[in-house]
Length: 89
Image (spheres, one colour):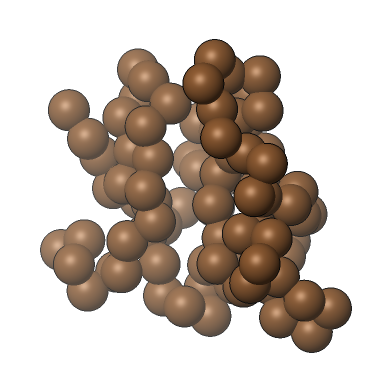
């Protein structure tokens, strides 16, 4: 069952426990704009992370807060999706 959180520690611990890293979609990422953020799993089979660029957790969470996002995730899998906090309710 999917859960939703905005807690930075929860997000980071969940991602890192599964080999996840903070990332930005390469085509949206510039020197002055992080762009669209994701959590990538580079060691996962069938992972399509070629279009992603690893960023720092600080950059990730700054953009996460700026865009008022929440993370929809499954605790026992690598499923995750960034959603609007408005739709998380």
